[in-house]
Length: 302
Image (cartoon, rainbow, N blue to C red; front, side, top):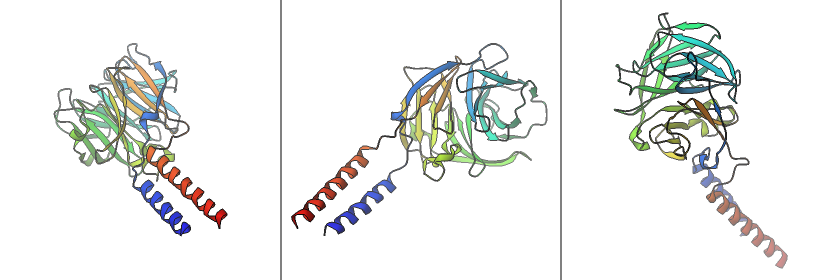
């Protein structure tokens, strides 16, 4: 009888855990440190986007003044930069591997495939591979983008009027592709959308269910959220007491989250260590221990 109960408990425990949506547990993240970014002319003034290059282990930022893409260490030391010429209101940036990035303009809603080369100038007048997300938008267009390495797709966000979260398949070679609404952005209940990060860029998350989740940041609501691809909010970090201008987000291979703000600087959020089980997991563990104790007692009496 006891063995049957234990088998049933194990089955129920596994079912309950399988049904739970994997999550980063943002409530367990802590602000580790903050560092400033170079704000002088020609660098990352009014930083609008940040992305992590897993090949170099460094961060790349771009400002909405379209002056340069700047490479910095995880603590803010400047490593190099590439000047931009002819670009307009660069608000989106994501690393796509092999030294290449996708760089987005907010108003034109163009996404360009660019190769980073330090100490050079990238000119928009060149025949850059590009894709367009829509008509000209008056400072309410393409705000953020993130690459999904699993299928070479992109998740992009439009700021407002209307807010939108897109999933896009793009062939930069000939400028073709398509994009569709991933889910109704109104489900998030925020005032605007500023950036997005696909969690599938973290190798240890692949195949765990976490790789399907997204980080989405809202500058005006001062909120960083972890959401599913159906719009369910799994957790959040309130940025209200840190910044009113945080609008970029990325994550490294260790699950460390970097949030950039216009000032310009970066907040670094550290994951919980060790991971703390959810209350439901505690309950299942206690129930299991109770059943095991009961079984041991029955054996002693027998």
